[in-house]
Image 1 (cartoon, helix red, strand yellow):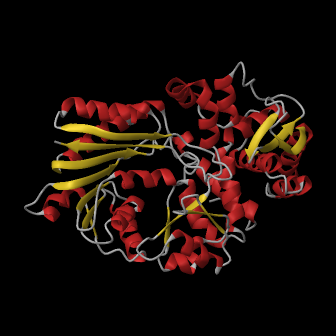
Image 2 (image 1 turned 90 degrees about the horizontal axis):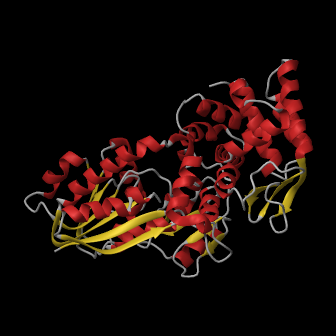
Image 3 (image 1 turned 30 degrees about the vertical axis):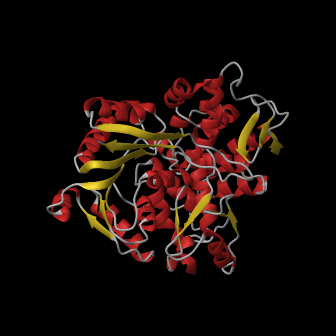
Length: 458
C-alpha cells in the first residue's frame, strides 16, 4: 500500500488508492487502517464519500480542468477526487486547507504538487456557494449533499432533471446508468429521483435493543451515560445515534445491550411466525442480525440452526450470539443440516435471506454500484432459485418460509417467488413486502430497500 502519510487525509488516500488497484474492499481496508487514524470518523467519511460520489466528482474535475481520469496517474487521480470531494461536500473545511494539504500529499516533486494545486484551484473557481439550499436552486448547477443542502456551481454541469431525468439521476447520485434504467422501468419517473437519492444518502446508525436484556427507552438512558445521544423512533422500538465513537468500545455494546440493523432488514425476521420453543432453520444467516431477531422473538427458548456456507462469516454469527448472550443458536454448514436435525428432518419455520445484488443497500455498501454488472444478475437469480428450492425441502406440512433479499430488482424478488410458486402448488403466498430505500425525515430514520415474502406449505 502506497503511503501518503499518517494524517486523516493521507490514510483516506491510501485506502482509496488500494481500492482502485483492486486490493480488498473498502470495508476491509478501513478495518485494517482505522486503528492508526487520529479520527476514525473523518477517514471513514472521506473514503465512503469519494466512493459514493465518484461519477459526480469525475464530472466536475473533467469540466474544471478538461482532464480525462483514465489518463491521469492513479495516485494523483485519487488525490484529486479526495480534494474535490472536500471542496464540494465538506463546507466546514476551509478551501485553502483542502487545496494545500491535498497537494502536499502528492510528494516532494514540484510537478506533481503543482498539478494537484492547479486542478483543485480550478474546481474552487467553479463554486459559487458551498452551502446552498435546494429550494430555489437551478438543479443543473446544484450538487446534492445532505439534509436539503448542497454546493451551488457557477455554471450548469448536470443534465436538466425535467428533460433528462435518467441522465440527471445517474450523474447527480453516481448511479450506473444501466441500473437507473432498470429502476425507472420498475418504479417510474415519479419514484426514480427519490430511490437514487436514498441509495446515495449517508445512512443513519440504527441500533436495535437486545430485548432479552433491555428496551429501547432504557437503552437510550444507558447510552446517555456513555455520552452518546440517541433518538427513539415513534414506536420506541429502535434508536438512531449520531457519534463518531468506535461502537465496540462502548460498554453497552460489549455487554450485548444492542446490535446494529437497518429497519428494513428487521422486517424479514419479524414476518416469520415463531414463538418460544420453535425449531427454526435460518439459511444464509451471517452475519446474524436476523438470527438474533428470531432468538429474541423466541425469548431464547427453542432451537435455531444458523446456516452459512462461509465458515469465516459463520464465526461472526457465533461472536454476535456470544456477545448478546443468546444460547438457542447452533451454527452449522449446509452439509451438516440433516445431521443436526436428526430424524425430524423438516421444520415449521425457515428463513432464507439469499445472496443478492445488494441494490437496496447501496447507501451502506457503497462499492456495489462499481462492482455489480448487468450480466451478473441472471447467474445471481439462478442461485436464488436453487437456494429457495433447497430451503423449501426442509419445510414441513403447514410450515412457513420467508424468502428475503436486500435487492430492489423485481427479477430477484417477485419474479423468483412467482417462478417458485408456479412449480410448487403446495406453497401459497401469504404476504409480501417490497420496501424502496428512503432518505427519511425528522420523524423517520430513513431506511434501506429490500423484499420479503411469506410462503406457507399446505
